[in-house]
Image (cartoon, rainbow, N blue to C red):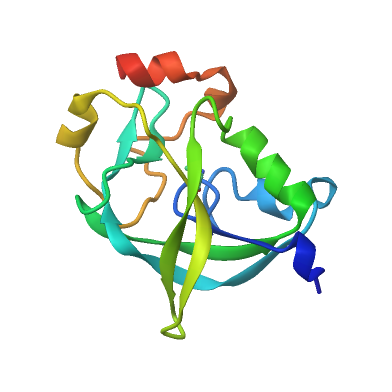
Length: 156
Ligand code: PCA
């Protein structure tokens, strides 16, 4: 059990999900602790798109547009939370905020999620997903570490 004070609940909808390219980040012991609590869906609709030449999933800070997004809920310790911030390059690339998530048990819980606040309007013209999966048509580029906020602005 994690100590209450250290408890953070995070909703992941992209490459951090089970079976997706960055899931290992949550299971890596050196990163800290993460406990899978179950699947969940955002109470509010959001645009979820895949963008840049790296095919990165982005949840865009336009509540009310798009779909109720499907993802997974994790309870993490402070060390893991800091590691997630590192991966998402918070606050330079992704921002994060707390959002209501509906769980499989029909409970609503507040969870942190990563989202993009500054993006070009053309991002909103992309296909809005309900659930992200890495696909061969739009393969997630493992060199994401070279990606930066400027790539988002260009969205090649
Ligand atoms: N990782 C985070 C945000 C987008 C991404 O690929 C996640 O899975 O929720």
